[in-house]
Image (cartoon, rainbow, N blue to C red; front, side, top):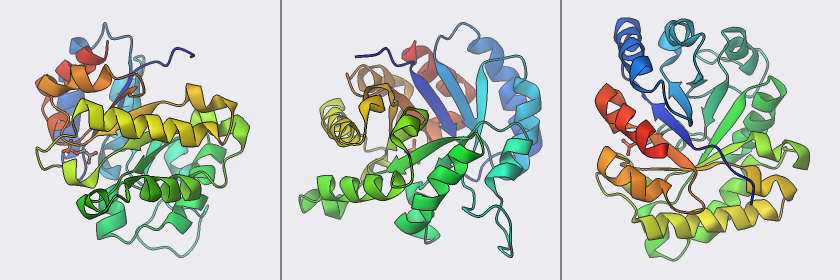
Length: 250
Ligand code: PGA
């Protein structure tokens, strides 16, 4: 199995102004200077440039939280992959469950967004995850298979290793109800099996777990064989908590 560099990403959602983002990054950088892990910050669009400027010269990546699949056009309120790349943003979160549930994000759009991100040189962080209802109904694997099939439909085998997958069970997001390490590992192993059907790079793909990751559960979750890091929401808003999670990743 190839060594996969641990990866911790801060999904700030609709939090932090430019001033707050700048203050956070200035406080974070010295605290995580020794990390061997990949670290990404996903601020709102308005704070992307401020975070990009502050992290130059460090290993911290900057990711947007969404983008449109088209290069340009009459899509009021949207931004394209090239617009993000121009800001020196390196990655983009795609298919977050809040986008899917609250803003009508579809698998069809994601099938186009993931290759559009790759074509612009952005690393797609593709989010997948089941609702509580789907889990209780024994549909977890079917939901994940559908989401992955769609999201990766336009990705050539050779590019698979450039995609990051975030497994976020919807019932664990912002609820304080974390999947147990065993539950999370079981699903992430299943995701890796699905990736193996798509190409040899499957073992290089980082699979992150997300859903109420905190400093006190991060070590155990990220210690699972198929969990390569975390996508952190609530706990990423606090610099001490986020630094502790990065430290737990190694
Ligand atoms: P949470 O959010 O850590 O607050 O549960 C995770 C996410 O939505 O990415």
